Image (cartoon, rainbow, N blue to C red; front, top):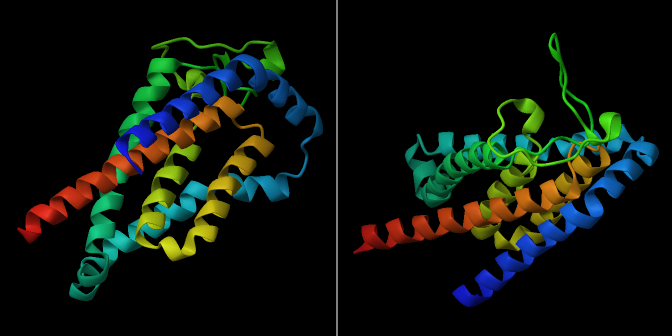
Length: 211
């Protein structure tokens, strides 16, 4: 796709995120709290990034051998960049936006995190410190979409697997009411952008080595 097409797609994703935050998130979170009880289905799906983090680690470790470097060096390089960028974007974005969670998950001696379900509180608190303000964007969606996009780039013939993994992560997180829909759309968008940058850098370095 052309750069212009990419820009329009990212703008569409950002617009969908804003629409979800303004009109959908609180209603969906309330409905999920009242009606979603199949944690034995949703909880494993919500841990999707762990699977791909393990796969990424195995690919990178395989490059310690000459055979692994021969087959997976470009993939390992891209995954390494992706993990670094995804971690940086995740921490930075959560701190910048400071959104409260849909449910109350954090319980400490000083109190519990404010949430939409328990306290009727939902909002953004830019640069607020603490786990209570880490809902936006979803780190699980970010890492899943970033890593899966890189695997998709390297193994496009398995696109059905990659699509199911991406959808599964969203369904799992939403089904458990861990995140608002807007958090997940934002995380997925940032994850794809992370992979986009990583793949571009990988291709650039490969071209430099071939000259």
